[in-house]
Amino acid sequence: MKFGAQVGCYRNTWDSIRGVVEVLEAGPWDSIWFADHFIPPPGRRDEEHLTAHEGFTLIAAVAGITERLKLGHLVLGNTYRNPALVAKMATTVDQISHGRFILGIGAAWFKREHEAYGWTFPSMQERQDRFEEACSLIRALFTSTEPVTVEGTYYTLHEAPLSPGSFQQPHIPILVGGTGEKRTLRTLATYGDIMNLDGWAGGPMTADYFRHKCGVLDKHCENVGRDPSEIKRTVLMPTLLTDDAAAAEGFIANRRLGAGTAAGSKNYLIDRIGEIIEAGAEGIMLGGIPTDDLDQYTRVAEDVLSAFD
Image 1 (cartoon, rainbow, N blue to C red):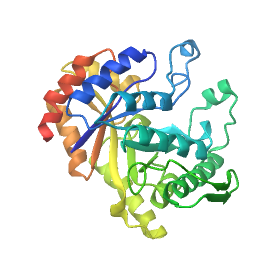
Image 2 (cartoon, rainbow, N blue to C red; image 1 turned 30 degrees about the vertical axis):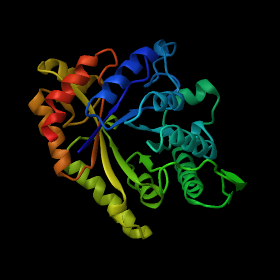
Image 3 (tube, rainbow, N blue to C red; image 1 turned 90 degrees about the vertical axis):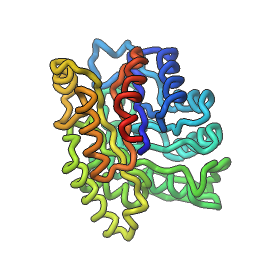
Image 4 (cartoon, helix red, strand yellow; image 1 turned 180 degrees about the horizontal axis):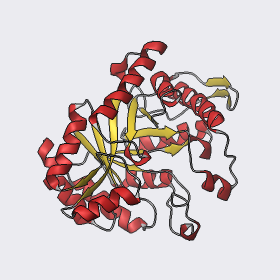
């Protein structure tokens, strides 16, 4: 089983982030992930002055100081960057890392940062339309051996080359973020390579919930003529290793997390993660471990991840 960590990039410093990167690179972890926001979510006005490191810049820096970890975002917001620019940035990071980059992208949801930076925040339907078109464009750029021309509703390319292309072959994997059953999972079935069930979204972190979402994805794959085995299934699990029941309950309540969240004792975390793995997850990303608590990363690796060697 492959384990990654979503490392916080808000309310902290680059030096604290780098400390976690070094621990992960030296440990049993397989991958490192960052979110993509420009002010700290969920958008409290009294926190807008706090640090929010830009996600793509972080990934490029981490690519240059690591040799082993896979790298990605959970997830980039499509509305923040032109998707052709995203493809160009992605292949550059993939070259820097010698094929360790995964492109994680979603439709975007955080209205306040759009307002703060002057970006248009379309309706949910338009964001989904834009996202589907963006994923189509990015996949075309990743997979074409010729310059790409697109005349879309929202995005246009005129004989656009992508050089350098992906370092890894056949191309950089595309992780589609979100589990909306009507649109997002259909976009994943059509253009994506990796599914990620996001525990921060408040849904239950249970085997039944995971199987349900996988079943919806499988149906979309059938409808678009895609082999569902081509899509890797992963889960982002908010995590707190503690023997303090009150602390675990507070972690879940304060962040409005769903049932089955991996917050509790060593054995509880092993049971929760084990259920998801038995349900078919091929990768688990753990999130929420503070960047100023390097010991917790080490304890999670030694006490929890070691159970799945």
